[in-house]
Length: 217
Image (cartoon, rainbow, N blue to C red; front, side):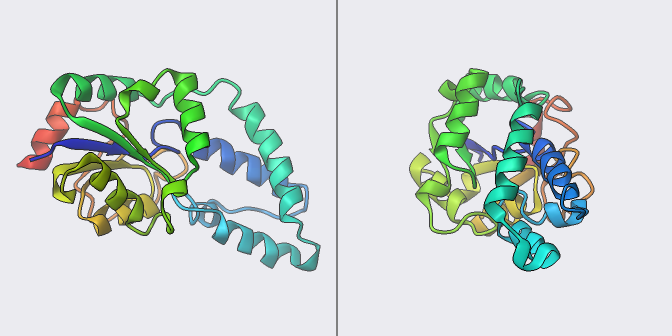
């Protein structure tokens, strides 16, 4: 029986991933380097280790990660000047609250990053627990974030339903023993997702109660 809903953050609640991809792609074009989507998605839901390795492979000794980051961040801020929650997110949070489900976030980003956006969107008050990279040794695809979240919620992993948009996130949720609903964004929709419990185009596609009924069948 599902007792809690645990959401990823980046790319799921707010589509930061598309803005970051565009920002990095435009930045790397200044160095005459093309950033393929398939290389960028390796880091989606996790950290930037694989992305930085790609930059170093392409630029060699001239690679300055701090410089690339500064340029990309500047572009990202312009693209995300007025952030918006993805379609259906607020409805799911309202529905989960009314139905009495515990609500949490398990994110590979920092707590400062997550709470900043949640505050700006007026969504912070919905979340009983927020677990981020600040709370664990390993981010997704390791299961640590989800295990920490279910522990903080005082439930078993099989009593929580995860919502994810990335392969790294899906792998983390499954490894922790959770059921998982995939809601891809434009950056992740072409990924080869496997072993998920349900896939939605957006949270506006089905009511939360109907999703949970399907999961609990």
